Image (cartoon, rainbow, N blue to C red; front, side):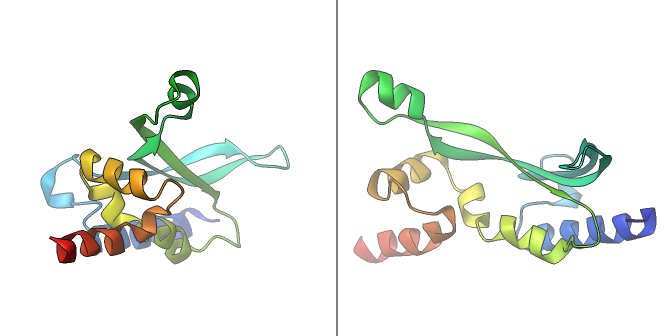
Length: 137
């Protein structure tokens, strides 16, 4: 990808993440999701540009769960990286993150409750669970 194409792709991803409240340019550097272009080695051994997104997400602590026998939860950095080649689609890259936007923005305690009920539930289904919690009350 040429530099101009990379800049366009970054703008598309930034705009999409901003729509979902995951990036808020007016609020300084306190973003829920950070994106950057990094030079990373691909599967063919060449160092090429990759779009990299990072965010914090509540997950099951499998190590503690195995050693103590009780479910344990932690906040862990998640990362999505994709090579910026001719097959790269900025909209699709952003969609992989925005589908879990409510999960990323949720409080740790709410995420833990979701995981207790849905141990293998996908983060994209969190909003449905949250809405059902409101109806139940």
